[in-house]
Amino acid sequence: MREQLVSTPDDVQPQAEKPTDEWVTGDEPMTGPQQSYLSTLAQEAGEEVKQDLTKAQASEEIDRLQNETGRGA
Image: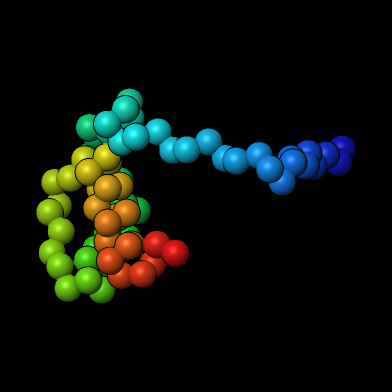
């Protein structure tokens, strides 16, 4: 059985991400991948990262450090 691809109009904008303060699981500890990527970004930025961040806090730090290091492009 072949899967059909559905095209979308070019003018359709993707939905904005939900704000981290509205995440259902935002207060859970950050994930392993978040911690790993955050450590990489922090090292590039010459900063240290707290290890007890929540998922939401880690996401916000990742966004900030991506912008600071130029990886957010």
